[in-house]
Picture: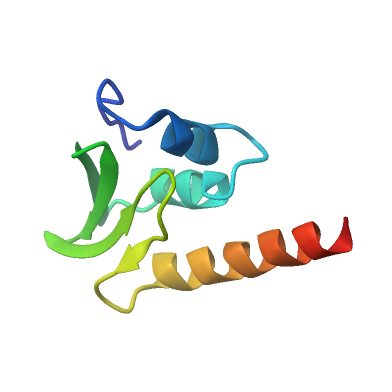
Length: 90
């Protein structure tokens, strides 16, 4: 189980990550079961690492920054496509 200190996390990111309808919520649930992933809050953003190497940075209002190809990044791209499709159908 992955735990992080959310004290300094951006409020927009908190909503996207922890609310069930949040864009990044599915990533958070997957991260809970992946023992190779760790996460740290820095500068109000969530920095995600796999085996000590930075993979991804999630921010509240700006776009995610992908540093390495990783299954979690593929999931992120799938979720973003779903979100865009949902917005276009409204």
